[in-house]
Image 1 (cartoon, protein in one colour):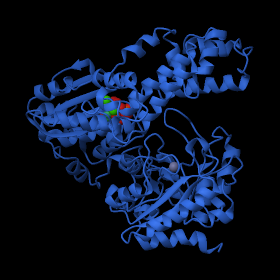
Image 2 (tube, rainbow, N blue to C red):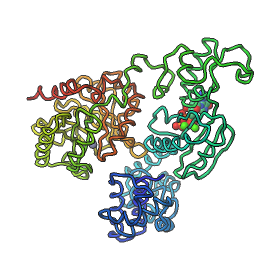
Image 3 (cartoon, helix red, strand yellow):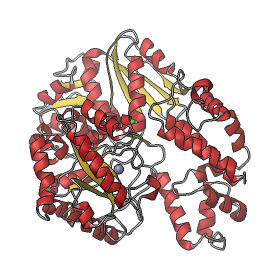
Image 4 (cartoon, rainbow, N blue to C red):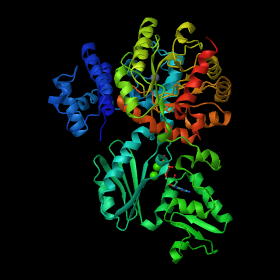
Length: 585
Ligand code: DGT
Ligand code: CA
Ligand code: CA
Ligand code: ZN
């Protein structure tokens, strides 16, 4: 189960090792080009499509790269790249993987500082002996130290976007095993957390043998950690652990409730049970007869056990959606009724075309949005300072606006807005002048650079953009990349208050690497009364399917449909959009 990004990562790593070992620039660049190309492919490679004969047809892929890609897709390794790893101390690969540390710095640290792994790097930063190396000033070394701590904090937790497709594939295989009558994933994955410690799968079956065998024979199982009657754990070659529990069907609800957690929510429910002279455990909700011996061992029939719904009901509670089973304070019932859902989304307001760094033409992008039944699409290519993303000069933007307006005129079933994702500069000013912004229907202002600013500077910068009368939404407000980059840490209470006052949205970017706003920030926005649009920031056609990750995060933050403009009908949405223009025209 590999993905294009896994193959691309191997090429990036190989390029880095080549650079560290002093290979010639021509060879390094060729490898980097293939890595980029792989990242941009619109479709995932699989055993059928990734043959050398097929791959060489792709622009920019030669015979030897095609063979390597095919080798990876078929076997999960690239022997020539494995051999490259032998050329440097094995610990340097971990140093290279630290966020923000490129091959040039790693080469310097190794050759001039004697750094061979993360441990020596940390010790040598501590002792100050690296400070004499050129370009390794105190500030750079402090950043490296931060990166080590950051990667340690996120160690072992993988992104939701990586875990969910894996879990779905596993559930798909296990559901075909004989005897399986019910199946679900549980744990943090079902609660939609942004990162996942391990994947928990729950199965109802009389017999545990068939589902257990189905799990241990999943492709990519590297090690069976535990194999018993009711619980089996395996580790996949990607390092992810999968826990499978097999329970009788009549206890499935109680087990699902228990293994979905969170631990705090389980405690809350057990307390509710005790208050009402009941006992709740993973086998069911029982009457409390004061006997310390567990009721299920004494043949006592549960009051409820087969479904989660029946247990909440017997406790006198409304069923709480998994995303809100976090912490110990129950969520307001009215909010639960009005939570955002995937079906409620009717507009995509952040999407890129080939005009900047997307792979879809304007027509393709519109087609993708129409296919999903959206009534509105905003085309938001990058602005001029985002040079790496092929941002548009004013001249190109004005031409793009005309093209978008012409395309809009051809469709009666969808409104296509001429928008832009405008860089918020370090001082809070915007990348286009107001007279240009005023010609756009829709403006997202996003921070893309200077993402290490301190809190007061970042707060001031973002407030300026929120208060700007022509800005509709702040895109991915902190700029964080999960497990890679911490991003800005502005005073979110202040931002939410200003966002409410100016009716400027704070985006929840649905890309599972971003999920920015994060769940706790969404909660703050809801408490303050700010608007939170959910958008995919689509660059590829498949990115439209990332919406579900934004929905998970939104629901965790208690985001309601009335606070999420993408859920609004056409007219109210466009009234709000225009309200940001009438004031200044
Ligand atoms: P993760 O895997 O670290 O992302 O987080 P979870 O929540 O999936 O935690 P995990 O996999 O250790 O356990 C799955 C669920 O099982 C957890 O959410 C609640 C339940 N659980 C596990 N151990 C305990 C425990 O010691 N006490 C209670 N009350 N519940 C537990
Ligand atoms: Ca888990
Ligand atoms: Ca687990
Ligand atoms: Zn974007």
